[in-house]
Image (cartoon, rainbow, N blue to C red; front, side, top):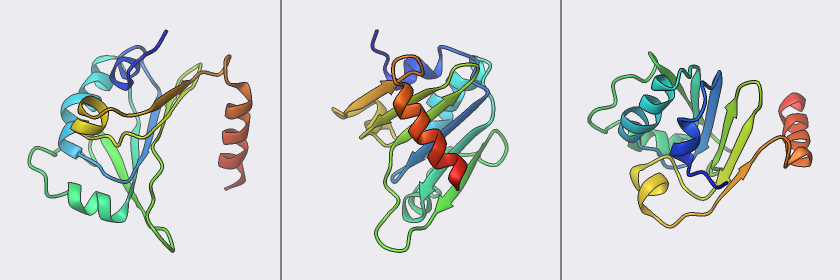
Length: 137
């Protein structure tokens, strides 16, 4: 079964959700993604975003819940930009989304983007590799 990112957000009461991105729309995140997370019983959302991408998103109208209902952390890299698009949905079973779409209206709903949905039973090696990278930091 293939799920779009917004479908996965609404499927479970996620304990923790983390998104990495370059471009970001906080108004999209609050109105669409965060709304589905909270309605589904989810909590502890974190966005790791490139410094420039985050700076651009802070001027949007309608973004009022950052720091209250979710956290955003800027990520600076020594050369280039922080550009991964990985979403981690954590509960009793974790799921990863790796794709090309930023969490924006177009990136998750308008553009033609590539997305891979990885579950722990089907993608054991990927989970082990990502887990070892996280633990080593």
